[in-house]
Length: 183
Image 1: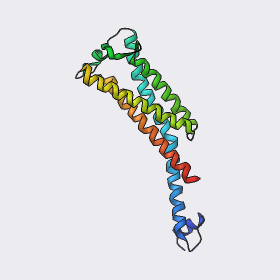
Image 2 (image 1 turned 180 degrees about the vertical axis):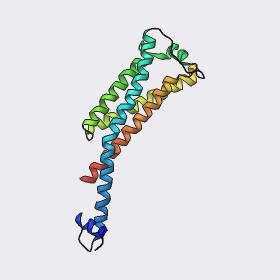
Image 3 (image 1 turned 90 degrees about the vertical axis):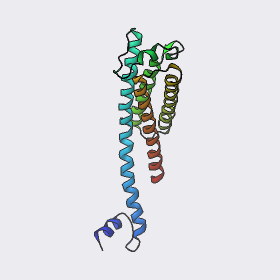
Image 4 (image 1 turned 135 degrees about the vertical axis):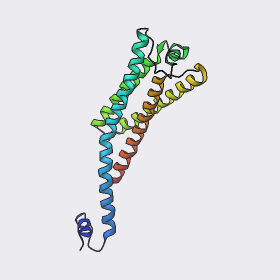
């Protein structure tokens, strides 16, 4: 008997039935991969949330103190966007909402790192990230369609939000697949 057959026999297949053992080995390898993804994705989400938080905090801090935003040389629309009537929702600067959003996403990601299989946390992360993507899309439409100016911080926030949504969805899919593979 070859070493490969012996390995699968250890996994529980009888000598004449290699096919079920191959499936068991594949599920074990897939399970190890999904377990790694389950552990890593919440930490990636925390890093992304911290990046978004830094951007939103800078924007909020500058607006709160009445300071102009620093924009890289080719892009000069940050202050035009910040001074537009669309930069406030219920008389609060949009950056304040960004700080709350990223703090909440960081908290969800930290809780997912602690309990990656919690159904409510996984669904909450996907829904909240999707809400963030919708707001980012709305703000991009406002910048290009109505304000006619472009803010690099808004773009960084939008990309970060999309990446958070991708991470949240991938975490949901991997955890659903791993739960169904082992039940």
